[in-house]
Length: 457
Image 1: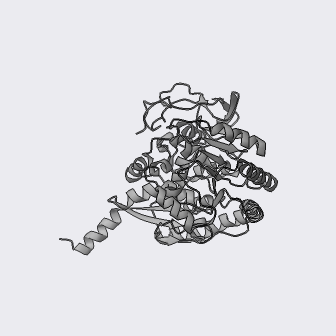
Image 2: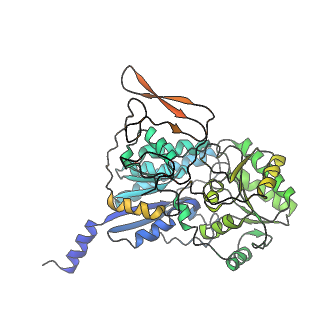
Image 3: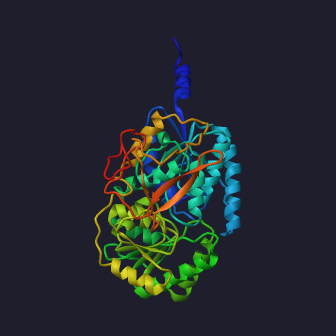
């Protein structure tokens, strides 16, 4: 008969060690519900690691209560592209050491942050399978290349939409490893702060006037365009001019850590000190519970954050996206684009202030986390990656030719995919806007096409 100690050791050996890496405030929102579920799931040994801006006290507020198992410091200050590149190198070095120490069975990461590429590289080079959330999306700027690079290092893929799943398959990933689940950040939008908490938060954090959140207000979140300092400077200056002229009570949340964040931070400090605006409250960062409250109750979100497209569509919140940072991202009718010009921004905001939109399921139904946990528990990814070659016409699971509708191009185009020595094949891809009433199901279902209105698992 085995002893209690032996039984515990055996149970520990049988459990799956899952490591979740959080490096930004957005990561926290997208993994919050997954962490809660995994911590209560039998057979899972969960390890949570924080790094990036989540360990920088000048970047986050005390309301970020994560309780990680490990903290990793790798960010290089400076705000430019060289600092961003060095931070990736630091992440590779530090996470390689940590992964070798804790020896997880699976690393879970999300999206397209530059530091996440360092995490993915460290995991891949140490032979640890990667589960990647929000791959396959098309956006713009440096994010797109980083996102697709992480896809090629990952073994399990959890895209938000069928369009994104198609992109992942076109990158050479086996459809059997692609699970369309929706966006996990939507899962936590049912647990938001209340009025009194939002008023108290303003009194005890950051700077600016106190805004009554029961009255109409704008929400601004503006990120830099990496490696484009002049465009970033114009972007922030024109947005400041627009918000200043509108004179509507506004919450402004600081930019992320991308190269150029120092340009945005400097412009905002100069504006705040010189103009002392009487209608703006500035936040350096907000957890999703408070940020979600603002997303839900704002009259209009303004800027170039993906939240204006993803979370705002789910909430039915009007959104104005400025410039090209999100130019290719799949969106619903709640989002309108504005050029980088103060008058143009004002004109589009004025239109959106009069609009009301129905909540959209383009990015899921708010139950993605439960689906991902189920797959994590039951799917064992292979450590060796194999390129999945699409032969002949690009076909769906039933063998029928599939025309993939992409959301960003205005015309049909052909993509050449190598088919071996001496020849190639062409894949016809539709380039007109296309959205789904609901989001399609798991591409592993061999009888189900990427079709309008099909159910997720």
